[in-house]
Length: 304
Ligand SMILES: Cc1cc2nc3c(=O)[nH]c(=O)nc-3n(C[C@H](O)[C@H](O)[C@H](O)COP(=O)(O)OP(=O)(O)OC[C@H]3O[C@@H](n4cnc5c(N)ncnc54)[C@H](O)[C@@H]3O)c2cc1C
Image 1: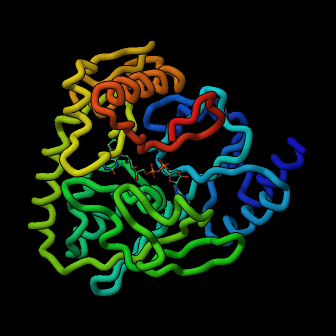
Image 2: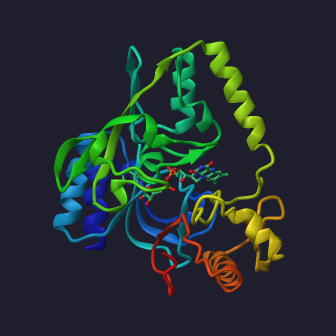
């Protein structure tokens, strides 16, 4: 099957868009992860629909990867097909903005500013694709992506559908996409008219607020806030865990809810730091922290 699948993927997606034994460490912000058996960039939605139908029919596992900014990829890699979306169109009419799932948040926020559309400034600096932002319902500074999303085009078991806001189940770092096997194709947002200069100023201020975040490879905050008033970073810091280290993975001295890779960390190192933090916080407070990150590939112990 190996060779047949490889040639089929090349035929469907274009030879230069298919890689074999591709290191996932090149495609995750933590810079860890073994090889993906196949790594495919899909340039248009029709090809994606055909590819998914074929993979389901051939019983081949697949995983959609955005910027890999919230993913811990196994050191053992992934034996199926990693799919990266290469369609990145952004358009708007009045205050209604459409973005393809493969577009980055940075481009969307910049596009909105350039066209005098306000409402996304808070998202400046979050590494994400539109697909990943929607799946995770990413957020910062009291805002979340879902608050502006009005429609989402999805692929649902071979059928293209458009979901409305009340079908998206957005919550704190939660969406319907964690419950159903929908693939996000594109997202429609309702924004407000604004002045590009004021929007730009707000974006600059957001970037300045983020300047203190750790600079080493990470996946942002590792754990979700278990309830209002429980500050995960402060709690971890209080327990003296800043700097706790396994191999080259450590609890960031700059922000205790970040685990950073300061060299050649493995996914296993990161997971061991994560588990130690989880256990220590649970023993001290009775609260089991729920990781925000998504696992890719096989791990010995489940974390969420
Ligand atoms: C330095 C740094 C700072 C960060 N700051 C923040 C922050 O302030 N707020 C915040 O919320 N997060 C933050 N994060 C985490 C991360 O940026 C977000 O979770 C982001 O939404 C991940 O997007 P992604 O495109 O990288 O998705 P990935 O990490 O690649 O994927 C995440 C999940 O989405 C799924 N997915 C992706 N695309 C699709 C699709 N088209 N259809 C279906 N499923 C899909 C994947 O399969 C996976 O399960 C930060 C991360 C880093 C590294």
